[in-house]
Image 1: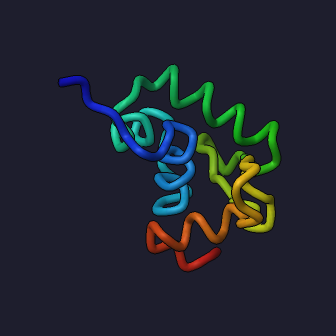
Image 2 (image 1 turned 30 degrees about the vertical axis):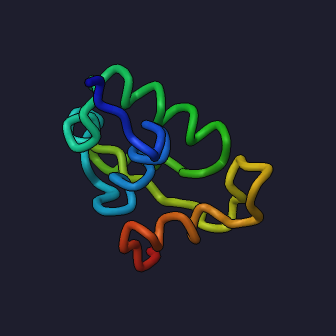
Image 3 (image 1 turned 45 degrees about the horizontal axis):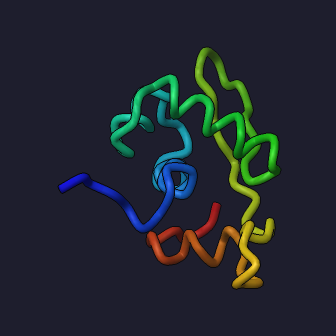
Length: 92
């Protein structure tokens, strides 16, 4: 049987960033179970949509989550912060 997740890769990458905003793209990909290249593409998507902001600190990226951005769902008025609280996120 094929493995699947109730939460999309985009949601899982966002959750991984919420747990450690200083992880490398490779580490985020490993956490989620996707390639580094796929993780990078998702990070770009999340940044372009305003969910995260990427800041260069030394030779690393540090991510800041914008918890007030609404989820892309016609079924809910919840925000990104509301979703991340399900993953134990305490805010930044």
